[in-house]
Length: 255
Image (tube, one colour):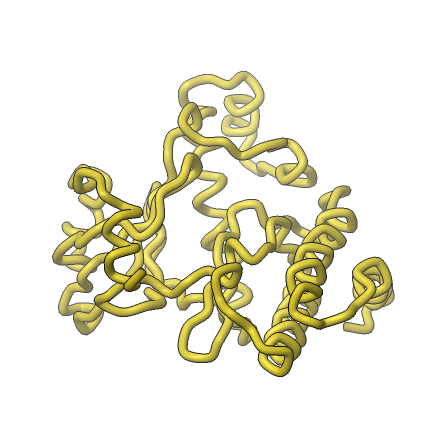
C-alpha cells in the first residue's frame, strides 16, 4: 500500500480542536495543524506547519490527553523517586485535589521535555525538541509531506543494516544511562526509521536511574525488547548479560 494511502486510512478522523494548539498559534510557532500523525490514549501527535519564527517547514506537536483518557500503566513505577519540592503542590498531589490533578498532568509533559532535551544535547538520536507548553511539546518532524517516518517494527532489515542499527541503538541506551536516564518504554514501536537513521521517541515514562528503584528492571526490559526484535533479523545478543554489563558500569561510574 502506498505510504500516503496508508496514512490517510489510518488517521481518517476529524481535525483536532484548535484549542489544543492556542499557545502555539498565539506565539507564532505554528501557522497550521495539517493532520494527525499518531493517536493514542496517552497522547496524540499532529503534523504542523511552522511559523516564520521557526523558519517554516514541518513540525510535530505532541498533545497529552487528560488523565481520565490516558492509559499509562503502573504510574507509580515511573514516578518512584520523584521529588516535589513545593510543599503546597506536594500536598495537593497527595490529596488528588483539582490543583493536584493539574500538577500531576503536567508531570508527564515536563518529564518528556526534560528527558528529550537532556539526551538531545548529549548527542542522542532523538527528534530535536523545540517548545514545551502546558500540554504540548513541539519537536522535529521525521517524515515528509507524504507521511511520517515508519516505526522500526515495519522496516525490512538485512543482517548488515540490522547489526548497524542495533549497535547504534544500544549506544543510545548507554548514552541515556550515562546521563542517569532509562527510557523505560523502549521498543520497535517508539523507534522511527528515516533516511538511514533510527530515532527514539516517547519519553514521558523515562526514569532517573539514581532515584527510581525500578530503574534496573526497566533498563533490562528496554534491552530485552531491542534484543528480541533484532534477534529476528539475525543479531544474536544475550539481553541479560548486556543489561547487567550496562548497569554495573553505571553503578561503578564507568560509562
